[in-house]
Length: 486
Ligand code: ATP
Ligand code: MG
Image (cartoon, rainbow, N blue to C red; front, side, top):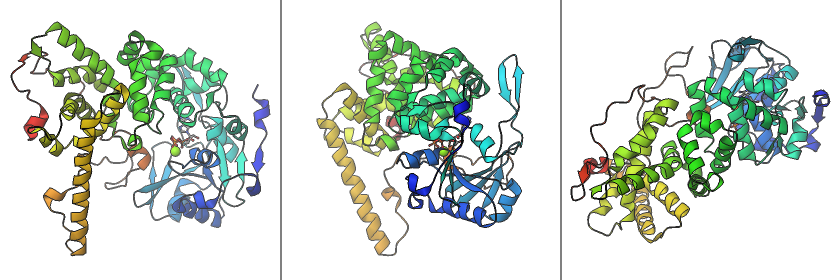
């Protein structure tokens, strides 16, 4: 069935569009040093795919026949990570060029739970390395010696046809690693490709296996679905393939009862995808936007049930988000930001010129609240007059602080005064994690930090909340975190 895909295709430099000018200079350094010391050195994976599509790659990975210890000897800035399969992280400032020795598909074991792989150091040939990868368009290599593209898996043809196809039998590949089903959804949505029919059938058959995957990996992939302005398409596929009902049953049920294809969830995600700040949204904003329609439904229900009381939005926000955050091990910072955004964003409906409402401007969550509020208004087609007042105020303040910083720099005064700190989303300090087999202080991989915005998961069991819904009568001020901060 997959015979015709075994033919190796080599495209010479004149037959493809990859130019070294578009390759990260540090990745080039790694490739050249490996090649100049007699090793095979390829650019591999997503970077080759993206370069061929004319897209900017997120990161550049290298594949080589050099063994991990050889790589370490060649690069002083190299850290070996991974217990079973050793990967080299070659570090340039904050950037990491992940360099791995060609390996073959690990042995499979059949258990009652399905197939699983043992991740031992099973080095292999470049062809074997291509075949162990997930999708044909992710299995392409760029050879630094000949500047040619090497295709062992039929990826070039699929790139041209814009088809996402598994390498090998999807029934087996998705059972080996169920996270590949989420990756299939992610790439299909991000690249605007069509998912191959056999892969679609296999996901519909094996979607429930996603519950067997490691929770942190699933959580990381969930937040990746929000990236590249394709969250609406990605979550729609997640819902269609029933992966959403396995991982996030609450939101899947809400989509079903709120119109399915016409559920408001899609319009809020669509508004976020098209927002000018879409690429820079924090995971807190993303989580708040995704769950906003569910939260708004709960607020409406509470208001109808207790018309004489002001609804405790903070409590409701936590009630909606907490089970999800616990179940998926969402980092605490993301959860608290999302809950605060749901609770506080209404403050931006009041003009900053009115009373003391401008004081919200000094709240640490303000920049995220502004983005969140803009997305909600866009989705609902609301009046943006007041929003523009807040945006103007924010731009003026950012400009004033920038000018003050420049003036200080010109005067040789590098220390920024405390009240001149930039108005950027708050970044919580968190303890640096140790790499599994490294000493302290090892640099972090941007591929990993691109995922959730802090590391600590929620505690396994939720603490009882002191405040209950609707307990605060209307005339009394709400005890919000924003009040506390003022
Ligand atoms: P992105 O632009 O999101 O980084 P990518 O294709 O580079 O996309 P990565 O997660 O960085 O994706 O993985 C790099 C490469 O490793 C992939 O292109 C693919 O070849 C291989 N790969 C990653 N995860 C898997 C997996 N679960 N199974 C098989 N191969 C995988
Ligand atoms: Mg990558």
